[in-house]
Length: 257
Image: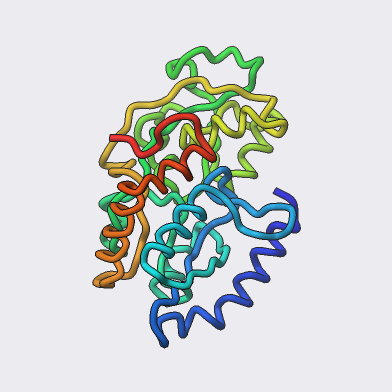
């Protein structure tokens, strides 16, 4: 994404970290950490505001909890350490609930669940997963999708990137042969002008050991906020607020099984 995004993210961290330390001091005030380079789930708009499906869901949850919430953009690779260092109170950033992450943090119940997928250039000769053998695949570092490729696409060369934006640039320019990510992220990208280079090759079978049981909200171990979030997730599902937000971004169900 544009350098201005990174500048904004750094500025946001600097500005918001002062507030995060005292987020719980006077009641229901929470700071939410997110990697704002993952559209349509989280991204920075032209005005410098963090937007996206995850952000709108979080705002609905905060309204349900009668809490005041604010957002801070931070790098994905250090997002769990930052949570545990109390830089913010929760992570809402399309983070899959996996056994490995559960060793470090607690999670709310899932708020969506979609499978991984592969995208390739439109003129690619790759026609199926078998055709990826010996090819270079791009993925964002420290993600379930990178782990999936390491396990299930072991006969490929995996190239890791700090952000999704960077692997997208490389597949568009031919520096990698394919990329792996969430099917929604890739589908939205290939429908955009920026993703006109590419197409979805296929979705992939979910490996629950790697992909987990959907995306959840991460909180520090033992934080009672978990139950509040679970109650709020159930409430916005029941009230129809969840569907209203979902329909703003997608024309299919992302909650999943």
